[in-house]
Amino acid sequence: MSIAELLQSHGYVAVAVGTFLEGETVLFLAGAAASRGHLSLPVVIAVATAASCAGDQLGFALGRRYGGRLLARFPSLEARTARVRRLLQRHRVLATLSVRFLYGLRVAGPIAMGMSGLGWRRFLALNLAAALVWACAVAALGYGAGRALTHLLGAHAADEAWGLALLVLAGALVWWLAHRRKAGPPAP
Image (cartoon, rainbow, N blue to C red; front, side, top):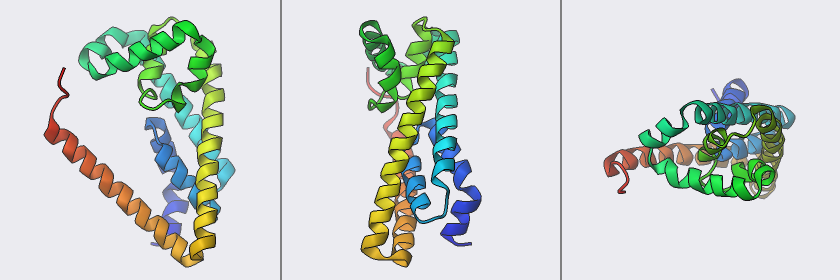
């Protein structure tokens, strides 16, 4: 099975899972695959918007229901949720719209917003708008990079380069997970 066939048969599922969890890299690569015709850019954006929004809604609901217990269980979230809470006190709407674009706050943001008393309907509307902008921007960057790579390397070499990039990304993820387990819990 070629990379193109893999992308066409499982690409949208990978986009959904990756963006549900937090996947700028997955979305960027999906945009690049769309530039080669392996995926449809509008479908990539729609899937990423829906999955990303659903992931944040889950985080919001968990923060609303189990916020204190989550922070006790995962102390590393405390500093990030405190940062989001400070942002929410000053600029509630802007913070809700921009938290997915702020490094390190994508997971903690919805949890903190759920703990803040922000209404779920308001969060849903703002979250959906932000997810759409995010999905368009990241997928478009990937699409542009894919077009540039194809222009520079040619069609066949570009597919091989993206396949190599996927392998390197998978290897880096495995190394990071293994390294994280060896390091143990973060120091207080």
